[in-house]
Length: 164
Image (cartoon, rainbow, N blue to C red; front, side, top):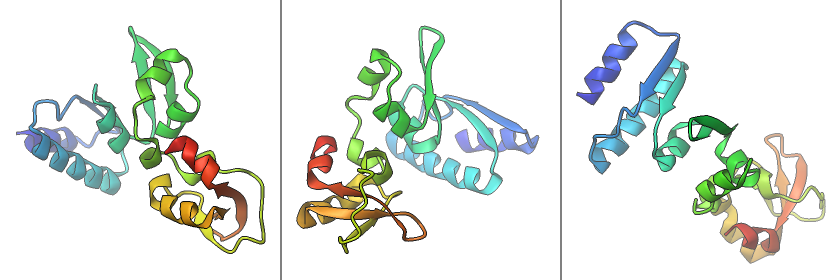
């Protein structure tokens, strides 16, 4: 039924796709499957989607920008990284404090802007921390490079330990 409902909503070719808790009544396995299907559809259609959910893990998985509301007012709009690294107030800070930071934050968001051209071990700035954690801990420090392989900063185990 959920798939049919999503299909019907797409049949009219909306410019803006508005979904209010579309997966809330599903069991966890089907919910995960539907979320993955949703991401495939979004990737294909490239539509703007407003997706309402009270499940923050779901919001993180599906959204590139999240709006946090409190008592009917918008408190903060931003990426999951923005919400974690620059919470607008204590409400957002408390809302995000138990999130798995190493899975959500990219190297770019915690790197040091100091450039060390002598370090031959590199990681990409858009990688998630959990993927490069072992490399940084074993080497002590690494250089951070952008997609053009230009060194843009550095990262060391002291910085990593604050977010792990």
